[in-house]
Image (tube, rainbow, N blue to C red; front, side, top):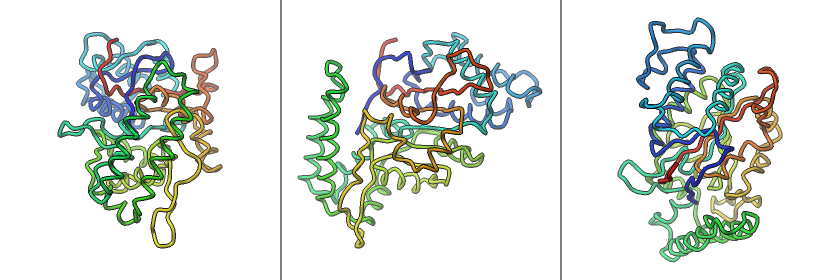
Length: 340
């Protein structure tokens, strides 16, 4: 169920301004720099790398390049970002580099974060739930119901005059009714696979390279999504990105022995309860993620900033040593027009 990143939040580290595709390229290049400790990994950003090609002191040249690209005004790269607290970002980046990739984990939303908000053809990209609205095998009645539900409850989700605590019952109702509509369509596992594989749900540029790099260096990734876990896994499978370092915490379907969809798992993950999404992970996975001191968190909604809650506590703003610090670098993708 689509959401746009709206407004500003002091808790968000920095925001990509309208250049989300360019920004996903930057995320990939930043990761390469952190992993490889090379100047050359940042060359695609057209930033001067002086005469050296490798780090003489781990982290230092990379920090210089990152700081130059992010914090110097009137350069090509910084025009794509909004950073409210530059000093805080400097501190976070420095500590992430100090800890190294061995202590890094990625926590990301899926719809309109790992996936595009707008397709290459200029159309609104499908979401996990949205693919059913366009699926020819779904009845017209079911598609109409799903669209009406989005119109009705979507207005509640984005209404700034309604407290979030009041919205939660409506979100649970929305997800519950939507899931029942989907179940009523007698979807088979093979049909679901065909639906996803034939959909035009597109990932952002450089996401395949980003995920491949994470897998290569055994950096764990958890995808927290209020969408559909089965759909996310099929999209990643289709793109060859369902690696063993990737965990999906989302709403999963239950199929019977004949392969027919009969229900959804009872613990619903919706827009406003992602802080508890870690409970959907196994005990073993939670322990693994809790050991990693640095998080790169990616989302497109103000509510996505809480996805690391319960896994890692960010103390980078406190007066602690680098060795004792834990860092959550929160990155927001701006999919709409907002004045800063």
